[in-house]
Length: 197
Image (cartoon, rainbow, N blue to C red; front, side, top):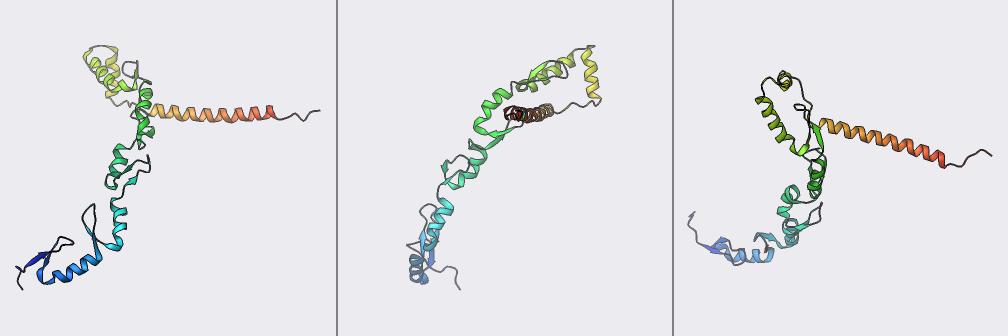
């Protein structure tokens, strides 16, 4: 069998077909296949609509309802959707991306005590403060801060940055819940008509 067999291009699918089979191929191809207008793939005519809707039709983001091409939906949901859930860098609270900047403006202004210099520092400045505070501490010889640095170097553990705020948040929620329950019981008893005649 020769590999240099003559070929012809099918007028319907634009594929090279052996010249001896071109008429039979063209009859089958034009009757059963359709070229997708988007990707130019040849798909069976009875599945052309399914192919379009499952592969190319615009889809709506389930988070923000924006309509886009299917192939960029995953990128949109992971990186661009304003309703995707992101985490605050200061308190690790999950919230929609569209609200993150406003939240971090407030959250970053909260303060925590620096255990090196005993000053309260904004959370948004805590990393730069830690660097400068440690440099100042390293440069000051014979100061009382050197004792604190030595203690820290010997293995005294510092609590993680967000442990305190998480603990405070849980405590505040618990106290608020108890206050609501006690208040509702108190007001409920006060509101009930007295049975005494």
